[in-house]
Length: 313
Image (cartoon, rainbow, N blue to C red):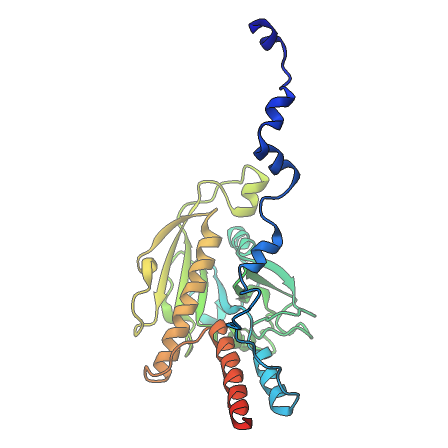
């Protein structure tokens, strides 16, 4: 009997039919998709506990309300400046006039976001022209489910020192960004007020810390050389408080650098917006995200409808 069991590798039909759980998993789902949807609703609503809003009236006031609502972005949007500082450069004009950077800077920029053609771009460009290529042909964008960002890279914008000797076309974008990423290849410390502006709140300065070696694979060619490290430090306006862990310089690998700097810039931009909203209103105005602003608009519409219903009754 023992020899017969060992020589028969096939499972018996009795063991399969005796386990209904195995059959259930193979033939039908344990939870129907409709069941999950019902958990979000009180269905059937016998007690009429769900508040159903009446349809919006078809009038001019409703049209204006919806137009205002549509102008509020669905996601939070950030515009971040990007500057390249070449060897020995210290002056604003020579930095803005740069049209290219080092290979490490190019690799960093390519990993910071996704390059997009500006002409005909349907999304938010943070003020960059998308019709006449006035601000360049391309820009870098990044997004996830709740956040979008555009990077105003000075090296990607046109430089014409004859028509625009002060590079004002570039500065009108980067000078209005609350946060700027500064890739510092100068070999010297970068001064915070190199690019003076009313809205220059925070600089995230990236400086090479170790000499890059030749990339050893296509993967390394995309993210930078192996065993290369960069110093990342945050500079802030004197009247701003400390901002998290970047109050002290950090040493970051080339592979982690773009993601680390991108997230730091976005968080710094949120902080700068909160700071500016509070400072410009004497501490009496609260920063409101796009999501909260959309919710406020919806609540106003509901209150207006409730008022009309009460007046009609």
